Image (tube, rainbow, N blue to C red):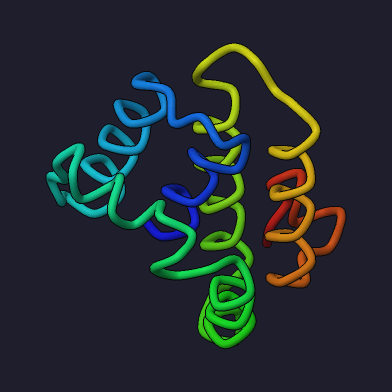
Length: 113
């Protein structure tokens, strides 16, 4: 959730469609219902900070299999594209998540065994 919430703010504009998309993803993947407030708090850079998020993802990656990583990546794509505008800040955030998770090109395309 932290990754998706921070992605919603990567371009400094949390769009309502991004909030809705995060809520749908979290409900689908975890059966967890989040409020808009939950997501906005999680997206505040001063609470988590992008450096802390990268550290968290680096620690978590050892517990994630290729399918888990692909799910995170697809959810991230869904959030970034939800407001129909993709900008350079969102692309940069996306690339930093891939780097922190050390995803191979095959994993990035959802190719897992």
